[in-house]
Image (cartoon, rainbow, N blue to C red; front, top):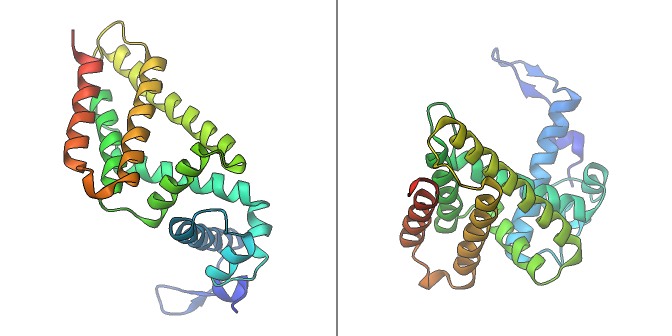
Length: 219
């Protein structure tokens, strides 16, 4: 079994000489490995049977390292959801410069749905955790609700910017739109998870984008 220090040992300088990573670099690498391991386990088995000790072992570290870094299983799962949302936003809107509000929101929906077609472990774990929260998994409900609230807030901010720039039609309620957008995307992703063979990603994406444009720009 590798220890934390062994797994995050020296790097190599441009001259080919060993270098010593800083404590922050070692921690970042270890956290990334632990999150990747947790995503694989949740995606394959659900969160119920996943323990912090098992995550540490899956990542190749000591059984206690995940507890040391995250403190609790609930905190680890909440962090997983944060990372999944960041992944979807990065895929949807890698650069804001020059992008309008409507296009940014369309890319967000597209990025979430494209994750259904070519899911990463993180994306698959996100869907599993969302489904478990809907089923009443107590350690997930609060984290999912908080993440939904932040996503609604982000969407409302984007719409507000569009209103200020004259791109979004007057009269659109940013908060109401954010509520509807989160419901739309989560509903489509849940359908895809429940029946992937019958779910047409291209059709769902086109309809989601059409709804966003109609909601924000139609008279």
